[in-house]
Length: 336
Image 1 (cartoon, rainbow, N blue to C red):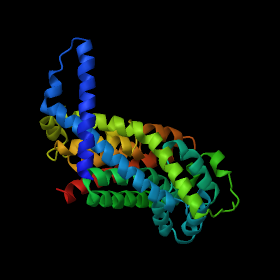
Image 2: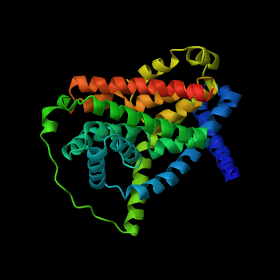
Image 3: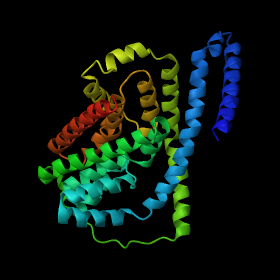
Image 4: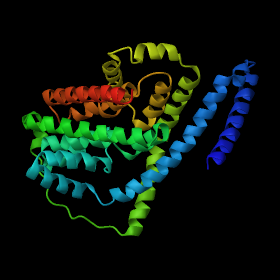
């Protein structure tokens, strides 16, 4: 399989390089850099990671989609409502685990949040779900596996779930329901009949979802890989290692602060994270940056402001920033 991938990579690299030579020739520009080792490494890195990542995403997303078909939103609300009310912290754990197999992004934050609160799910349990779903999903885990190996992927999943559980539990203990916007507090949802699809329907829906997901995220992956390839070939590694390496004790919180204003997802951020680590940036620092981008992005906070009063939103941001920073330091310590 890998020899076939290398063969395809070589063909694509040759075609793109020939095309660039043609374009540069038309404008009478020098094409000498196309023969440099940096360019050759960058173009091969781009095509190799593109093929491997897309193959893994298609395969794993299909499997996760089948699993997800057993947890429609109505069943998820019912499970979280029953467990969250009855046993508190167990509800946070269940919510974080369900977040892995339930699609969620910043654009759906408001309806998901309103739906869960309206179903009577405790506030802390709801936050555990909302934190887990964008941070620990099949795309993030798949790309981590492809770029760093299964051990890092599993460690990230464990720490992401821990962040979701702890942050949700803390928010639940603070009893901050009064800081929800009034429009949210007045909504109640009745029971909805849960339809059990056939296996044929599950497979069909999983394949459709798989293709739709690839259509949505491919630009982020390509952009991330282009930036990653550029870093791979031309980034000043000594400078990055000096200012974002282990010698700088403030590298992790700075990475978190830099990630908050940005808007992307794991698909677009992980290729950049991968290359930063190769240039000397500790993996915990790089992953803290990614967590901040995916779970604390400014656009998502603007959307959540529609249902959260400023004090609750500030508490959420503060707890997430502290826990993500802690996870970054933990990764750096464990993987030193």
